[in-house]
Image 1: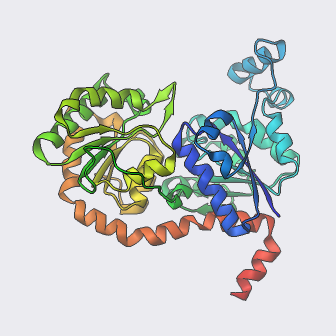
Image 2: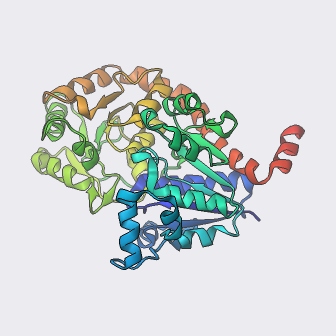
Image 3: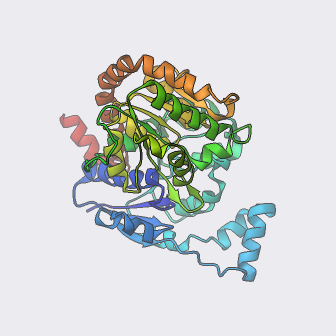
Length: 406
């Protein structure tokens, strides 16, 4: 029986993180055997239990080991902000429980697809280094990387992993060009493309295949260039849908963390249009249930990456309101271009920008849907290869013999 440890998980209140845990565990078991033991080192075990993740993986809590405001804690925080000493980082490492859990595992997988996309994921580097120092085989699953971040130190760090699956070609090409060993890099779609939906009864006002799904997040609002322009654009879009189509509107959250909760801006939208009788605010649920709602939409306009992945993989024509490389890269790989499929939030100027982009999508919805239906089976099959790459790291001889027999 193989033992796998998943780490860098912030909690299932971000349903993209939840989807990564579910699909990574599933792909590993698919490739290595149903008896593969998967342990999740989590920063928010209570959240994970809330969404029944403990039925699929064994949970262990990643508790901080430094007492807040102790001399060691103060030194650690000072070092993070000013000193940047690797010796201090490693001496006072806060993820020692995670390291202990990894000691008896055959493979350790960093599942933070976005974690190295922001500030190079520097906060994870000490743990990554210590994983290698104690002899663990390590894999980075489904990452995106901002090309401009790939300086010498970052390249050296990413090269520590025994295998890296990169979920879109912009990041992959940049990593190859920066000198990360090509034999360790694999261009593989995000594992969440393989997530199986759960279909619950639809709420009132949700017309199957004639409802436009909308997701907005505090993250994109935080990246806007003009204060208030994002919500003004979403308001104008909902008004456009209600006045010029017979579609309903479903407002769908995908992250519900208290400090980064999609339900805040979505509730403000709902309150403006509740009297129309054609707008529904979807409640919180696990990622499979949310995908079940998204799969029954006509079109989707989304900000959260894994909400848009749920739509793409269900062959729902999708407009992404994005702010980083991951949105552009995934769209480029699916459609050959990100133009018209990704609207950078930084580009919003007038209140009708989003509405105009949506009109382009709606005018071409059948062609886009047909395109997704054509390419998605092979795309999802490629996503499943990530599990096989993980298996080769711990079963190289068995896997090679099996492939030769085929």
